[in-house]
Amino acid sequence: MKPYKIAVLPGDGIGPEVMEEAIKVLDRISKKYKVKFDYNFADVGGIAYDKHGTALPAETLKICESSDAILFGSVGGPKWDNLPKDKAIERVALLNLRKHFDFFANLRPAVLYKSLAKISPLKETIVKKGFDMLIVRELSSDAYFGKKVSEEGFASDEMVYRKHEVERIAKFAFKAAESRNKKVTCVDKSNVLASSVFFRRIVTEVSKKFPKIKLGFMYVDNAAAQLIKRPYDFDVIVTTNLFGDILSDETAMLVGSIGMLASASINEKGFGMYEPGGGTAPDIAGKGIANPIAQILSAAMMLKYSFKMDKAANDIERAVISVLEGKKRTKDIMEEGAKEVGTKEMGNLIAKKIK
Image 1: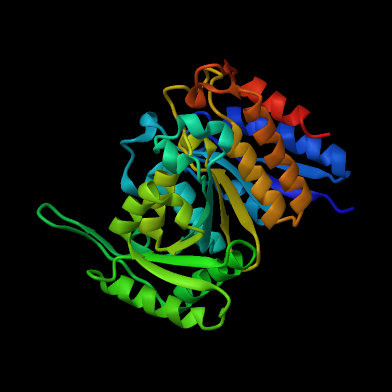
Image 2 (image 1 turned 180 degrees about the vertical axis):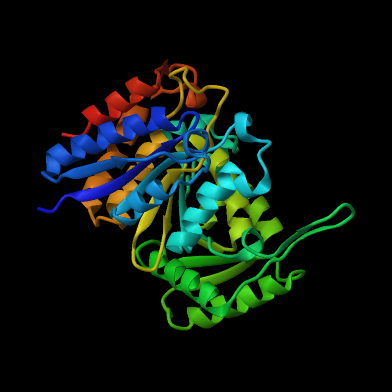
């Protein structure tokens, strides 16, 4: 069987630490399913800037182009915060990768595991009902890529959406809902923003091709509130780049820690980049206490969406659940009665569950 080529970009901060554990888990999958993963490591982010003068070297981009998927860590940190705008670490690394590969859909699942119910900030009456939602965030446009103006007494960010951009993200969301609870909520700010009026109109048009999917609408401010009050009412949320960025971080905290949030960025050809939802966490980098679960679950998403290895992805998810139910926790998800473990031990425990 032809090996899967994976571009591995650990990046900065805790990136290399949690990436090591994800690779450990993938090696167990490789052994169980008799598939080969070729890991091609490359520099990205601050470490790349220090070595090559840019956060996204040409060689790194070349490795990504010749791979079947990208497994990404995290980039940036205080050391590089004052770089000129055209050299800014996250802008150069992440936004350029998204633009180069036309990653238009960002998927961020948010699942409340029963074993983590006590560390959720939500009321017990809400936690008992649980939730399992998927945020489908448009990733290729909005204020992130619009014209920017910054002057002494004036600044602006242009929010632009084109019809084909909204159509493809809407189709992706409806197709995702087909294998879930068949419900899509379009989140926007159409009572104020022209771009949101447009976004809602195109989503409505696309919905006619998916008659079995129930479509609802919600303003983003109300959605932010309802995610706290009634998170179990959501199935698939489709939204804009800016709103999706904010809401997905909110859902991460509802499940207990951003260290649990995996994500996938996918283009129309099915090529994807998989990364944890959190940042580089420079305050704990090198201490061996970072939670690797988000990186490990991102690897599981890679297996599911890019390699169509659904059973293997499910194996990883079940392994994570089993370890959490066994009361083994990293510092960020600790609770009374649990045993605290470090980054490596958490990776070892999850890997050992895959047999």
